[in-house]
Amino acid sequence: MADIIGFIGLGVMGGPMCRNIATKHPGRVLCFDLSDAARAALADTKAEQVDSVEALAKEADIICMSLPGGPQVLKVAEAIAESARPGTVVVDLSTTTVADARKAGELLAEHEIAFADAPVARTRQAAQEGKLSIMVGAAPELYNRIRPVLDYMASDVTHGGDIGAGQVLKLANNMLVFANTVALAEMIVLGERAGVKADTLLEAVSKGSGDSFVLRNHGMKAMAPREFPAHSFPAEYVLKDISYVFDLADDTGTPIPAANQARAYYATAVEQGFGDKYFPSVIQLVESDAMEKPQ
Picture (tube, one colour):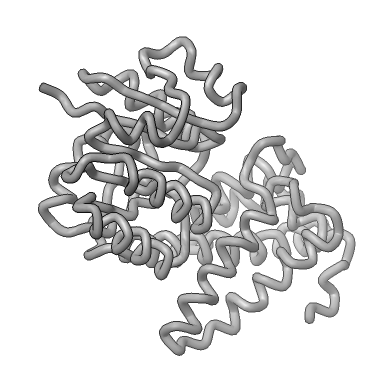
């Protein structure tokens, strides 16, 4: 008999991920979110709506979570610990600190509930298409058990090691994206002011060693046309993830001055009223010369 899969958190990324599970998994799929709109968006799938985290945890064999951050993950993990059966598996698809991932794992282990941190990378479109990249921290036997569920949502899955390794990989990935976006923003504006159109610059660089995922996605689709869609990953979320990177840097005694400069851009973006806008809108700070003298 197929596992019963529960999914908690049906937001920008969680909703599409749950939809893919509901479409591909042969067994029952349960879902929960505090938002009526988020639940309604899955009404055309076989996913069964439940009234609470506790109700979902009592029935599900594998529980997936996609939540805003560490505090929410720990709060939901506590509710699961009090309600789920021993032997239940929790897969956290959220981005948290490494310390919070390990804390959640310890909390659940006290109730004989297994835990994997499995944060996701790539865009909302990738989530919709089931082509995310997922980085996993889990014991090998647990990784093997949850791999089929991850494959419902991802085209690439990497096992990084024990609990916390998934978050290490995700934070490194995100910091590189955020820093690359800042550098690309500067070069687009520099090129435009020197008489080269953004589209031309990006096309040329995409054929050379300066090519990147950020260039082809954030650069070509958002920054060059200055189109920043609503309900996409905003600058204030970037700052949250960057704070997790610096927590890890502090814990490991690792200096990261280049990352600190990128953090200054996003802090200024929030200060300038861009906090709720799609984060590649940082290019508008470069245009306004707001970062002429970064702190």
